[in-house]
Amino acid sequence: MRTATLPSFAPLSGAAEADVAVIGSGIVGLSTAWELARAGMSVVVLEAAALASGVTGHTTAKITALHTAVYDTLRSKHGDDVARQYAASQSAALRHVIEVSGELGIECELERRPAFTYCEEPEGVDALRAEADAARAAGLNASFVTATGLPFPVAGAVRVEDQAQFHPLKYLTGLVEDLVALGGRLHERTRVTQLDDGDPCRLTTDSGATVTARHVVVATHHPVFDDALLATRLSQHRDLVIAGPVPAGQDPEGMYISEENGKRSVRTSPLADGGRLLIITGEAFTPGTGEDTEAGYARLQSWAEQHFPGFSTAHRWAAQDNSSTDTLPLVGRLPAKGDNVYVATGFAGWGMTGGVLAGTIIASLVRGDEDPWGGLYDPGRVGSAVRSAPTFLKAQWDVGKHFVKDRLETLGDGTNGPVEDLRPGEGTVVRAGGKPCAVHRDDQGELHAVSAVCTHMGCVVDFNNAERTWECPCHGSRFGIDGEVLQGPALSPLERRDPTDL
Ligand SMILES: Cc1cc2nc3c(=O)[nH]c(=O)nc-3n(C[C@H](O)[C@H](O)[C@H](O)COP(=O)(O)OP(=O)(O)OC[C@H]3O[C@@H](n4cnc5c(N)ncnc54)[C@H](O)[C@@H]3O)c2cc1C
Ligand code: FES
Image (cartoon, rainbow, N blue to C red; front, side):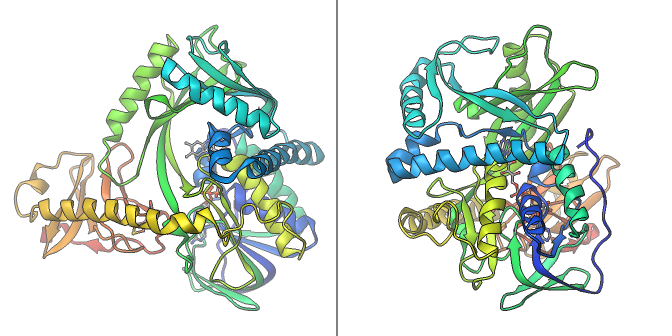
């Protein structure tokens, strides 16, 4: 985000009309908007914050069809055909990025690299042999190897040739410039708070502005309008990321991921001074479940120092993605919202190819063409997705309920102990006037208090000590210390409380 400058746009005011309204401007929203504008449609993009400042602005941007160990899973859950279609569609998205950036002349640090899924422990080798076999059977140029470019030994790895990495915001800047040239309209700081589906559909924003559009694309990452309860088929995981210059002689010259140690992902990117930046991701956790994120950063740092001697962190950040119950992302018509509303979500940490692919699929459907992948990602699909939903829903509610119940039972009343004991930078949930209240003490010693009840569906939020945010364990909504929505599906802020009442 420091090395790309996207253009800025004013919030929407008044009433607008368009063929298509796209809600959200991550890689899904901007890819879809651009595909549709290129097809001659009038498009308006509405973004709650700044362009591409959501997950897309915090990704690690490997563009690859090797998604950790997805092929063995797909093969066993859905069969060989689905695994083949998945590989073909994700590879098509990779080619599409290369073609589009070439066609538009976008300088986005696009580099071809092999992708690896590796393990350090011998126990992981059988699974990776099976993945190499499944990925090859699905049509990828995959092999099992024991030598990689990493500066430490691995027990084994799947290697897939000719994948890529890029600077996602530079790529999207190119798309936005072309989108504007094609007549596309974009509005930042414009949160959509209501979607009335129909023909046409009508959107209302937080400032009361409206958009009337024949088609609406819900590209908000977690779907914010979700009558079909897709949330029950999605789980959240948040990752920590650290980055710093690559120590001399240790550029691994590839893109790596491992499921060990709560996940480790490694890639490099070019720096302006001719050096390279090492980007390391890991310590995946479910947001809002009491994880000590500072301790997570410390573990990631220590792993980085051990595996890349001389590494020191220059930047750190965190971001979250969601995964679907049946492994396949959800892309297509949004169930229970008529024929003209579309959604794309559930990329399981692979939304660069997934987001670009979603743009091509949704653009086909909006144009009235066939889904190029025959409904592989259709959110309304029947089969294992739907069959697995009740079990998953129950499991998810059980986890959420227990977590919330346990916490409510142990809440202090805030009149003594917890709040007085809060040190600068800390946060806690207490009971105030019988209701859960989220309290944070800032670096100046001032208390900030908000309702601890998530405005999405009522779960109780928890404090993230590294990011100083309130996070919801149920569907991953995130709020600032004064309650503002940082990430949906919640649409409204946490209610402010008066800290002097505690
Ligand atoms: C740490 C990390 C590393 C990753 N690395 C990779 C990788 O190497 N390769 C890969 O393929 N994938 C990777 N991913 C996954 C990928 O980044 C995501 O799947 C992808 O960016 C999701 O894009 P999106 O457009 O769906 O969401 P977002 O980029 O979050 O866009 C959604 C937008 O909608 C806006 N919005 C939300 N609600 C509203 C509303 N009501 N009104 C208006 N706007 C709204 C938000 O502000 C946001 O800008 C990674 C993910 C993480 C967390
Ligand atoms: S995100 Fe759904 S209840 Fe909080």
